[in-house]
Length: 121
Picture: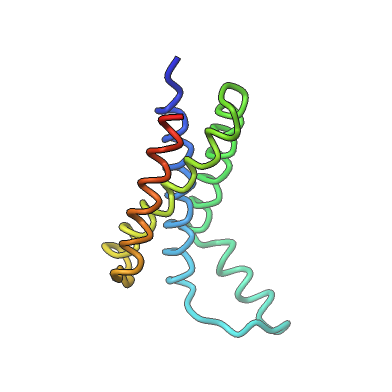
């Protein structure tokens, strides 16, 4: 049976969780890492709907990943997580205007080649 869609779902949920967490923390903003900020910043983070959605997406992605690991060899499934790096790099460029330099693009192409080789094994 082809488990690639299930693997891809887990990877995309994980990548989506990262993007939601990033947006949540963009809305919280920069803060100093100090004891005085634990409660006020902690409340801001805990009440942020993007952070909460990101954490929920992580929980669902872990459940999906457990299904994947019960059906597929970990040596095949785990390298597929690197597809999340590609999704987040491209999404970060479009959603957050993050840098997508030639070096990063080269890294993405290397990841694509690696994932291709793993899926062919």
